[in-house]
Length: 112
Length: 456
Image 1 (cartoon, each protein chain N blue to C red):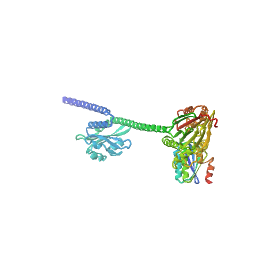
Image 2 (image 1 turned 90 degrees about the vertical axis):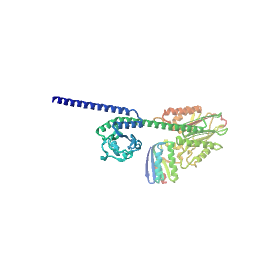
Image 3 (image 1 turned 45 degrees about the vertical axis):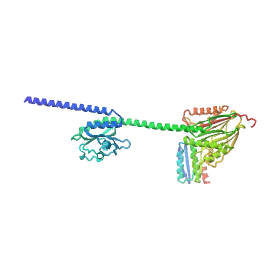
Image 4 (image 1 turned 90 degrees about the horizontal axis):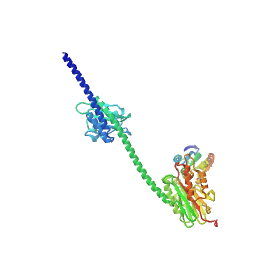
């Protein structure tokens, strides 16, 4: 699992690559909580390089949603491959995330 | 005159010969002594005995008032006295020296022997040890005990008996003794390391056994929540199985005959593995049983359980598929809480059981759940499973996937639930080919047998 974080104005763009599962969830959780601790409120998860997400991986995403809601922040996902998209669809998680095909559209969502 | 010279020469030759013989004897006795020491030192590998033998032998051979073997602590590099011979035996037991401290420390760190013929005239002498031991030291020798380039400790003698002090010959003798002593100590340390690892192994094994027995009990408890693997009535043939990746797991299923006409079935997956998942699953099983009584619909039951288990701080959740089948009419109402899409086998057709996808339970207390409905006909089967099947992996990192699942089911449309679950199990096993199962697996097949053609 590779995690890359870039800042664009007030928005933290978190790019994930590899597999988000039980083995890598801790790492993502830690990075996310760090950003939260720094006072960040707006997050885009760019899943362009993410090959796979397991139910343990979904737990991190759930944590992100819960924490962001608690501070009245915003969260969006973009660039999900077919596999990951399917997992979000089947698990019903697509109903709690704003999901966009491209990063630009995700960023647009924050400007709106 | 000549006679005197002749006698003188003879005398000289004789005394030379005697000297040679004496020297040879000395050499022989020394060799014998060293051989004897070597034999004695190799007679035991037990620490206390060995150290006592080394010290007693050394003191006797060098005619010393006291002797000690000071060992290097591998971890701290400190020097420590194990025991000491002589009357003050007890007092030296506890002494530890910092690396490099005192004569012993100097010898251990430099690897060079030290002979002090008169301690009162030597600045290297530290009073700390002798003050503790309360043996006034007059003279001493300290030599390193080395084996395979590693200093195991130092061997020390204090105060030569009688009026004379230790000399260079004594130093060489002590150095000679230190070689067999080093070998004996090395053997002792190896033996202790062996004992220690055996003891560690014993402790680990005992802990593992205790853990295994607890896990075994946990597994039994977890299985006791399940309703069994099979249900067979006139209208229904049902078969389910649970294969945790570890001893216990987070996949679960349930089936309850609510009354004469209604059968509740459910199957789900807690978003974790092992013990935490098993505990969460056990709680769920109780909630399902509690909320299933009464005439609530699947969505209402799931909604109620969701409210009970949702917690703001927790990220533990479970996907769940729950259905209530009217066994008389074949009408099945179901609710899908983010679970793997079930399959319907009808005739020789298979299709996905689509409906409204809601969130898994345990996420938000206010999630709305929706009921869906399907009419089953005699001979139709419903197959429920968890992602432990579709995400079963083989050594090449490939997944079993939905396509293989569909194919396996395609060949089993007319089979009984027991055979369907067995086929799936075998197919997944064959696919993963002994590659370690990473996720729990649960599956359930329900075949509707009643003839309800007049109703539909």
